[in-house]
Image 1 (cartoon, rainbow, N blue to C red):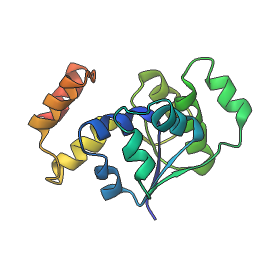
Image 2: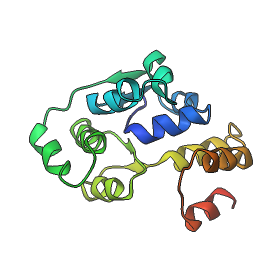
Image 3: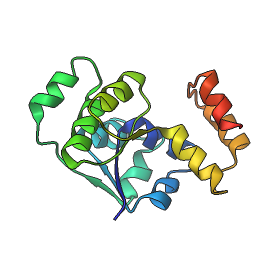
Image 4: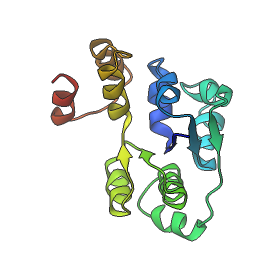
Length: 155
């Protein structure tokens, strides 16, 4: 079974683009820690991702065991990123995360990391995503990406 951990931003962005199902295309199960559920579904009520994530049968919530590790990371990162990184480490699963500091931390812990753009690029390669429309959508929702990422999207 193909599984992955994600934090909040990929869920919110993919939902806003109408592409949340892309995750299910590539993964049988998407696992999120409780803090991500709280951020997206509870605190994000009436925002992109809230209803979509609540209604997905293939998204599962799992508690993190190592609370001390989460609290340590939370000094530098958001609670959702912290819990997602530690949960990915505990379950030895890859992680979808966009925050640069979070990605650096995850890589330092030897986790396999991708981001929202990585998922969208894979979808584009498999002819599931139109990158021109996707980039326009990303810009319209205020998603920030650097020139290097932009180059990857169109080469």
